[in-house]
Image 1 (spheres, one colour):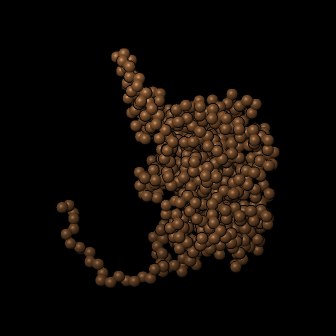
Image 2 (spheres, chains in turn cyan, red):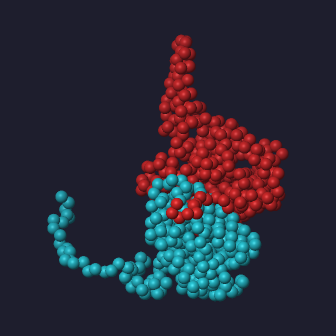
Length: 277
Length: 326
């Protein structure tokens, strides 16, 4: 028997657990502040105490970014299946649907921003990490092509920590080329592309459309990069510098134009559109 | 098998190596003792033939991964040296440094002049340290980018050799914009006005491979691999168990044979039996022939049509269905 093993329970459990209805309060992952959910939502899911930016889904993101009720979703009518028969992929897709209410990790459409029409695509980290498989790549390409065709400014808001989707193998890598090719086309035709990076955007998303905006805006504290911090740590076996791969560090290294807090993203986008167009 | 490759016998090659050793012993014995064992030797050599055929004609995906990573597998510059009649290397990205993990320069086959780029793994441990095991930093991709611009201006087709475990996952690589460097190349290569032939010669490690891997024609050596993630990484994520590499290698559909079926590559270039390292000259020759075959066709196409075709090719990449509840 160990020296410090307990032979009896000193801490008495309370007879009755006080029932706190799920989803009333949220503990800030950064400062541990307990925040009333309504307060958090009203604050666009930014911690009122420390400014930590919580995840928000694609639909809510569109709602807080575009002019009220201006968004018209483009229903591309394409859906993922399991082209490689990859183990467990269908379940992952189903789980993504259940957690986000979306049918894939991206929502595309058109809307207005400060009265100006824009083409917009938003990837949702809640759906398989916002990773890009065939459908995400195709939908993003469709919205880029629409922007070219209708001469609209393009805004892509990325929450794609999952990068290229593993479950679709090299088909996912090809989506990087497909989206990049469309972006190059847009630029060559004089189109404007603003990329908004949110926590986290990594790997294949970052190494294609996400990091090539004419203007790049990042949310504070967002993890942004190519390789994940765990992979880097395993490879180099040393401590990471402070703020490594955070939006603020990318700004310092010249990789993004602006780090903008969530409530200011909409006005910032409007300001840019008004200046350039 | 020569002496050098005997030092690197892969686990599935062991029965073959064992048989080869026995045959050699018999031969030595016959010579030493002056007895005639030719019948026995012949019998064993037939068995060896059969065993080799069985092994190398039915390679599993994981076995191909091992061959693709074989330490003696020919690297880009060795192949460049054999493929081109003459060649020269050029250096530096003009922005930061000269990444040793990506090489590039000029090369000529017959009357065809090319710009080549490629990942460069080391031939020895010492060289591998210099080459960073073929894992490039952003400056490697930017060197390739610069050479591609040069190729475009002089109307020279590009050959890109792919052989990397992946782009280097390091602090400085991230700070200098690894993702941006790769993304910039994807944009550039999708619209470049000269033919691009990509040859995957060893490991095609995800975005790090793709960063110089967009082309009109993508050729792949028979035992090369191309994958979105390493089998080890996939196994760790999927089964939380890094030893399940065989299952992961199969699930990822990373072999040339699978990728041809998926329409991701255009052609498989045969290797000598047992892998490219068994006969490097033959491997180089097979690649050279394949390049010549493609360039004859590609050089007839106008730059505008070339770009249009390439764009269309990648535009069609992807597999999905149009009915949700199919």
